[in-house]
Length: 123
Image (cartoon, rainbow, N blue to C red):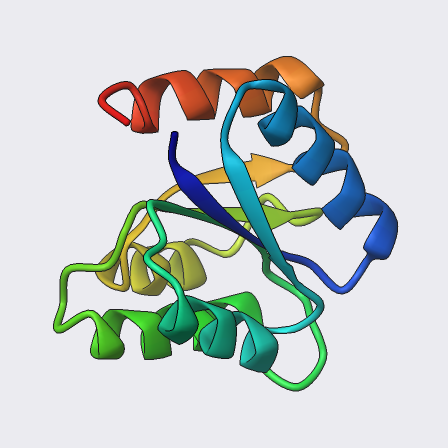
C-alpha cells in the first residue's frame, strides 16, 4: 500500500481523488493548499503527490520546488492537476522539480487509475 498526498484547494476535487485512490487500496493524505501540502509531506513518507497547480498561499509549482529541495533533489513522483494546458515554460520548470505528468481538468477517473498503476506498480 502506497501513501499518496493529494493537494487541491477544492474540497470536492480532493474528496473525488481521495475516494478513487482509497478504492484502489492506497492511503491518502490531503491538503488544501501548497503550504499545507509541504507540511503534510514533511510529516509523512509519501510515495506519490497529486497537486493542483492554481492554489492560494503557494501554487502547485512553488510547492513542488520546496518538496524537491526537502527531498534533496529526489522527490516522489508528482502529478500536476490543472485546467490549463499551455504554458511550456511552467511545464519545463515543473519537470525540474519532479513533476512527471499533467492531468487536465476535467479528467476521467480512469486517468487516476492509470497514474496509480504506472507510478505505484511496485508499492
